[in-house]
Length: 422
Ligand code: GDP
Image (tube, protein in one colour):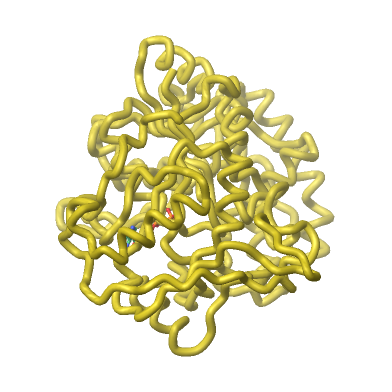
């Protein structure tokens, strides 16, 4: 079995999309265990621009099968709407029977909470409330869409439990009848796409096929391993693939970490290498570091070796992909944080306590002025850019397989085959 997992090594937004595209070219199936993480792209089809939030359109159009695995939560109405927009594709959008269904009250709870908290720009996908119902054992699974009586009972149970929550938020209880009817119709349309994803991945593996799995967000916002409470409500580390897809831990690998050549973070929480002022603005502009829905600039900082070293240890990276190296062109000096000072001690990984108080230990490397666009080999990179790459490789302790020097897929320098295990 070759099951490559692509994992964010920082706080998310590392640019996982491009390495996944490159790996997908040589794979038979592309899998996500959190919905929409490799979608969310605008596409132009027959001259018309469509925006997809859930369905990875480019892969399906390229003839690749995609799977939303058992750990995913998805809104079947949104899924079908996007498949209709996309039209006929040679790749199939498969959904695991165990994945959870986002119901109308989940979306309504998100909407009402957004209104109350004034959290504009937060996606109202209903995914959070859907996972809350899953954990409370009153979730509806994709497989339930095919069994009318079970669907009816489960939807009514979930709506009864949600009624007081909706009321407390100033909303109204929802009527089960039309919801059950809509979901039943969705089930019928999706029937041929609903699969046992765990068995499918296992079969492909035994046939010697290649599978690519995208872990969501990044290690430092993982619910367990990240900087709690500034985390997302799910598992973002390589180990999550075992439960989220339904594969044995021994089947996983290579594990490919993705890190930006600098660091960004969205939202509050400790950020040891954060920059302020002109340099932060330069990175925000050169790197296009704006939130896609809010348009707010992301917090930017220099490369944080202890954070990526920690990510490398807990994920077991076989190699690291360094993205957006081109963004650093034009800096006289490129400081890299190689350790943290905390209470008179030198730390080589983020501490559980005190990450907001650490002082970075900087290694100041000389910068390079030439733009990197169009450079195709390591040897053709400016000497100082080569030195930067080697310093990160040595201090993190993981070989670098690919380096991004521009947004296009072709603007990638390969140093070693990312399918190789260490
Ligand atoms: P994800 O959230 O980790 O999946 O990040 P995305 O794949 O959405 O990448 C975010 C943006 O970074 C996209 O607009 C990419 O085109 C861009 N990007 C990715 N790699 C590079 C790179 O090496 N250089 C530059 N300049 N942009 C890149």
